[in-house]
Amino acid sequence: NEDVSPKMIHQLLLLIALAASSTAYISIVTGANGFVGRHVVYSLLQQRNGGGKDQKPSEQEVIVCLVRPDKVSYEESYWNAHLMDMQQSQQCVKVLILPYDMLDNGETLNDALEATIKNGSSESCPICIYHIASVFGPTPDPIQTAKDNVQSAEDVVTTLDKFHQRHPNSKPRLVLTSSMAGVRATDQTPINGEYYTHRDWNTLSQLGENWGACYQWSKAESERRAWELVRECNEKYAKDGKKGREIEMIALCPSFVFGPPPPLPAKMKGATSNGSSSFSLTLINQWLHGKSPVQSRLCADVRDVAKAHVAAGKLKKLPGDDFDRRYILSKEERLSSESTAQALIKGVERAQQNHAGSINVDMSKIICDNEFTGGAIKIGDREVDASERLERDLGVVCRPVEETMQDMAEALLFGEAF
Image (tube, rainbow, N blue to C red):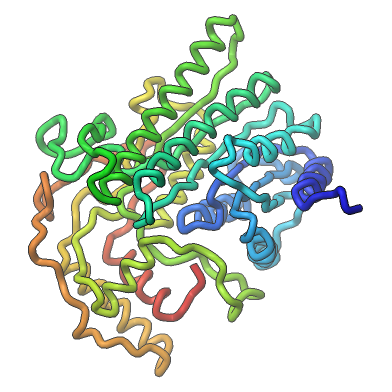
């Protein structure tokens, strides 16, 4: 039928999948084909594959990946191949790929939400939106890009509010991927004068200085607006006497995210990648090939960031205070540019050992930026307070930066698909 659109077909498939069994949990991931988003989906699958806590075998988990329309076909092949590798029954977990536009005023997100709830048994099951989609990196118009990032976050909350009003028995949660850029601007002094905590906010970044400042402003403003709108929604529910109705929210603030991609499924090995174009990948490639000096960065491993997202999405009881629902995801101090370069070199050497003859990198071209000393906090000093809360509340221990850099260098040089 010429009147049946691809979007309608996707929704029909989703409804059939949901009707097949009792749905225990629904995860919706925006930007699911990006660097962080893909790892979050993979971590959700890994948790289910390991028999997630308190989850019955007969209960189905649905993971909805929202991606750009031109990515849908590849992502369907990619995740179906992963399910085969994990020997996951589609009666236990279903991964569905739907088109997403983060600037359509929430239309495609609303379509995904409505499709998941149309099966009666899923009306009251928990739904978590992991809002990861955001533009990071140089663009022709960084000011507009920054405003688009903020608009996207606002649209997620307003769409979730409208959905919750239509379906009052739903249990919605938003896990917002913010950033250390939301915690502090370049050279901003911490509130306590020593290091940044989850109570610090970026109050200095402004639109218009350069793409980096625009991006920092966008992450701080996106998170601020999301919190503001969620509070307004919950206050409105309370004022209207709608007892028990609430949009839950957690904000995660990763520092610069590096790391390798998820393992490529066996069926996809050798296939042309259609995945992430993350700025992190561009940066590491430049460092490895001497196109720019290695910099000292406050880092988080993408695998740890993904684990924290999943834990935040499924945390049974949230902290009572909004400030305490905010987590910095990072190692607590910067690695020097020299130590970072040495870790990359070890990654190159390991790649050469594991893939003899196929890796050709002139390691003498890997140079360091020795001018940057760390901004408001010197390199090597404690820059953030994060480890204790991450481990206590989310069960996450951030791995060493050296491990992250070595693994990422080897993956990039061996041509693994990101």
